[in-house]
Image (cartoon, rainbow, N blue to C red; front, side, top):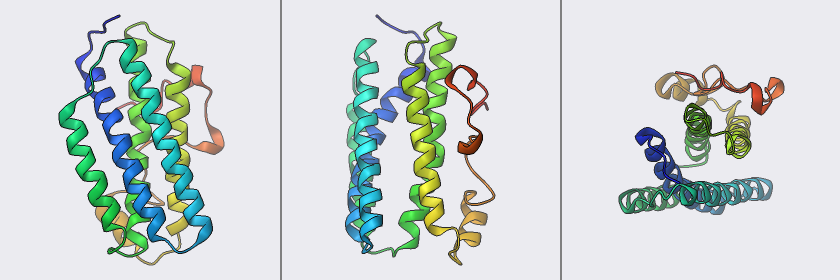
Length: 187
């Protein structure tokens, strides 16, 4: 089956490659922290990202969407650079930028769901919803680690993410079921 939605196709291709970049980044992040609980949590997030990559690939194959060699190369380099930088930029910045990245990733999956729904396709709703919610859980984890750090107010003001500001409108304590989630991440 083929879908005619260039924005959705591009989003799938980018998400597939970006999930690998995120996984690489979390490999470096987990290796750079000293706290065992943090290592375990970050390693689990890496595993989640590899799982998301597999799920996105299944969807792409269903619609004969090819993997972008450009995105694969670009995000490979980005992931490896971020992974290595975790050893030199200190403890705070990897947590901060991981949280900010995850905050934006949440909406990728909800936008994909919305685009599929516009095409009359609902079969991916549950998996896309689950991946979006998992990304939100990642965001919450990273924010929790840094919420009392004295640098957070400065970074939040500069990079528009933190305790006051998120890049999505999901509240895990009051989340809507899949069927009522269409208002998430609307532009």
